[in-house]
Length: 304
Image 1 (cartoon, rainbow, N blue to C red):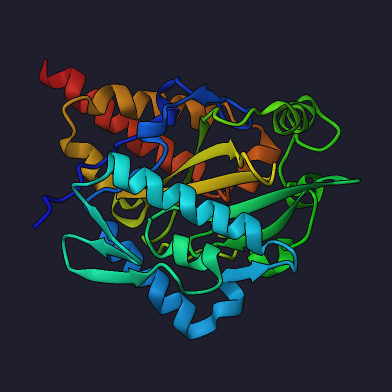
Image 2: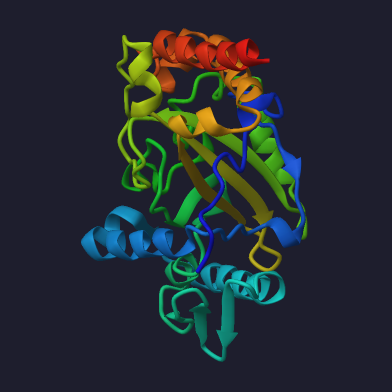
């Protein structure tokens, strides 16, 4: 049995990343995929979502089959090379060691098969006359966006609601990044947001409505997206992966470095402008959350 995953594995709100910036960091092939003790839970939820409404979480353009197989091959090779503790590959089967779950590697479509091996959502971005567009995806765990709505759209269409993206430096930097990304290069970035529950599948936008700081921590969850990019060496398309980490904010109270994390998250919340705050669904919740975080820091300081 796996041990429970420790909370707060990634803390981009600690100053290592800034909200609404590209914030790319190089990573290695070894750290591209990130299986953790929630592997089986996440895979079971993917299976459930695919069974309930496959069209909501999987879409693919005609002509993407070769790129999908390329993605499956790269993921299988990476799991064989770097994640033998969690995965075993035997001929045409991928096996999750903790439970014996098997995935038939010959199943079609290949992108869906690849997604059933890993916790990451997989998004294929294909270049065209209007820039890169979303040409195929298995997106089971979106953070307030819908695959049905964004499928086939360009980068500018996908990011239309994001403050400071289209017509601004961030959008231009992302376009250059996609154009200049080299095969064999791995990069990642992080997003964080606050959610009212721990659901993985969140296609709808959410609003946090709080006026009582004492209710803030018990009601809220900190959701972190770890996003990676790599160019597919054969097709030239770009694979975008998204891995979700979500922790109850009450867990912050038992973290050894809780004072620093609370202050850092509070500072990033206070730094959001009105548009950014609305995009994160925190217009009516920031004040109470900031007060709750300040209390955590004050309690630690008072105990020293």
